[in-house]
Length: 329
View 1 (cartoon, helix red, strand yellow):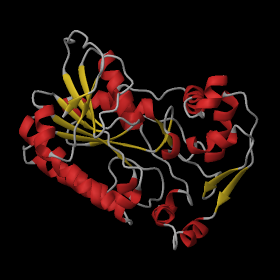
View 2: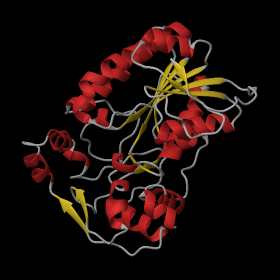
View 3: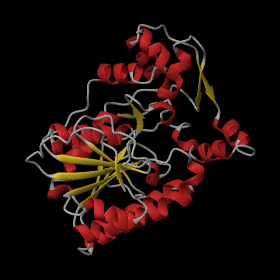
């Protein structure tokens, strides 16, 4: 394990201690919010790359190694799973050992396991998704994530660990990049090029801002009344893929671009020769019907409100520009 902070540590805050696994946009935002609230935070990645948050320690370690992770988490109050392998084709290899390590570490250290998750476990649904719905995933990615939560919940109910899961819709916000169906279009859309989106770009679709996801994770991390449950990240009213992209471009001062939908059957046909497109084709229900998540329970119980839609769109536009374009701005 290697400490790669590269700066003089700041005085220890008087709050609690959290360890965040993963330095993607959600992990970074969660680390920032913990730090700003006076808590001590470490971010763990394989490379130890800097979190980008001043005052937050970055550590190089393999989180799938329970011995290494336990040493890092010993004494911490919360352990956040913000890992997000972007390559769906390796999920069956990457997730099981990582999930097992997180469970073992939570049990050994007593840190509350807080998991950042997606809506995949629900599978295809009719109507808005709520926390009381059963997990009925139809593809291997959703079934895998559903098993992860089932195992964590069982360990929680057995008194072995404390666990809580927060599920989010498709991400918007700064730094989402290729992991977002809208954000991945920004670099070419600012050049006026047509945006090609999977499915029908005009269907109702819920989006979650990564900052709002992090706010929800931080809210449940130290709140015992939330543990043992699934919560939905606080999110704004549904929009559409077309409207979200158009709004993000407008926030940058750019005109709308043409938006074309790629029919799900076409995606599945391409999947015959492209493993990644095959994985996306299995999630075709997300793009071929309304995909709406209800976060009313979270808003009422935790006193959170989603960020203003205009702010989310601005962060999405400004935070996903190519480096050369961003420097000009």
